[in-house]
Length: 513
Ligand code: MV4
Image (tube, rainbow, N blue to C red):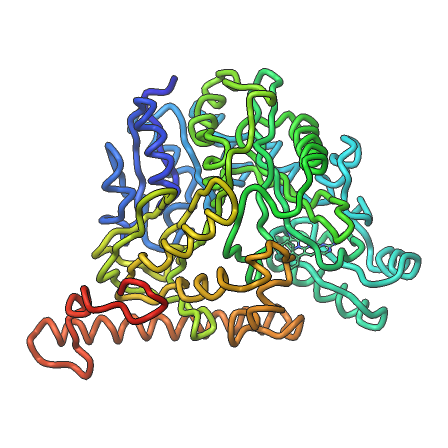
């Protein structure tokens, strides 16, 4: 087993990986950008090294520098977490050349899944059902012919895309030419690859994904499914395991398909197969994520398996310590992703200092977080501040605990998505467990002020994001200035000591304040 592992990430996932390492007696090495000097993941690590300026492309994304730090620190392996370098095949190649173990699949495996046309071809050959559509890169004319033959609605997708980037829905033949042109130019500018393919549009789909684990000795298992249909603009908000209205028979078939997918590419490590499930319970492979995912914790809660430890063990060449027959679902788990965003203001980022941080606790609660009281949330990285995960013997108990935990959870100094989660978990459709990927748009007003069904082209959304980002930066600057004024003893317009509010009687939703 490794003596020392470098974690090429920050925030909650870096802390999560370090926890696994500590239990295994492995020393941990953190890297940090200039704004992360005092971050929680740095405090958690046995050693920490600076990796550059705040923008990720100048620090956490510089593979050569990360590998060099690993070498100097004497780390035999690198865990990439999610995001950053986690799905860059070239980084895995670089590690291999430098003689450092990349904790994840091989670079060529990542590339074969990263390219959606190649992935669809591979899955088709492996007998995994794919969304009906093409398995070639198509010219504009070939797309036109296919859509003429099959008829709308269709989705035009970028082969280099994924996770909702570079897709276009075409409901009317008249929109086709412009959709192709836009998809192509967007794919070119976003990914440097303008290859497109087409799929039939699946109406009212659910997003169900299967966690898999595989070793280098040909063993592969699945850890059942997660339901991730509650998303807002391709950002997951709530996930649960197991899924709702998934029969044992459907679960077994989807699990077998995911294991077949892993075997087809010689997968090693932890991975996730994403599927769309339609109203008739037909399922279709969408894409494979070749990394640990944010929502892995709910699977850990229902299976008792520590996925990160297994990743480390199989990367070190060990065999999977269990077979499929050893695995079973125990109870139900739900995750609420708590973001530093203002749900009352179109979810604009809410950076700043966390003046008060009092996470929920108690029976059936797990919180994975990368922050602490006094820490700063910056505009440089993902604004997720904590994952609130609850477990219950059944779904009703997991929901009761989630509601209780949301009312206990206190975060002050920044806005969070907690009030949105509170509304969501009270919704009758959520309580019934009857929802699809349209839930937030159709039943939560798109998350207040959010876009109306398919109204805004991506360029407008990107522009709105830039404006939101600037407004958030200005607001953070103002808050800082106000605090400086308050600290200097000059009363500001609302220079209230944040601690004064602490301990005041609860006023909202029976919660703590
Ligand atoms: C689709 C689809 C319907 N039909 N493909 C969005 C994310 C990306 N991974 C694929 N996505 C979709 N692909 C076909 N042929 C609907 C979506 C989709 C979606 C998928 C999963 C979770 C949330 C979603 C929200 C909107 C659209």
